Image (cartoon, rainbow, N blue to C red; front, side, top):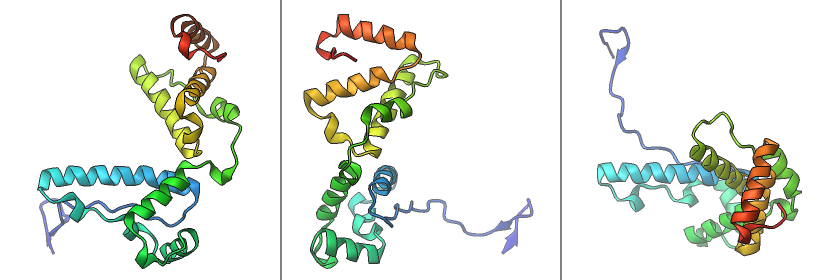
Length: 194
């Protein structure tokens, strides 16, 4: 290789290296919850690449089946899906991954009140109020997804319970009291002894 003017090696380096898909090396709830986030980022990056390059997304994106560790895929399909891996479709894998990541971890419901009180914090250093609120709701969503609590917060009762947890986790106490009063008097349908 030749040296360039800066004393570094000059050679051919691909300017547009394809992003690598996240691998599945475990089927634990925690791992799959994190993997889903990485996979969503990978797919977004691939869609952006296809918009620029004109490539067909379905052709260039790596299927989930190929993201699995090969031995884990065989074992997973045999024990979890009761089928050989060659007979399993992409849709079947996606459905089972969604089921695992969307279920309560170990089928044991954590103390949701304590979980939210200990984990959910409003970023008071953020000066933009709308960004602060959006971040607070985003953090709530992360806690819900990481612990497989999506089913706990569906329907009207679930939404009301989620609102209660969001309000109860607010700090400082003056902000919590102000939000409770606002909910009580201006959003009566959302009120539920927060």
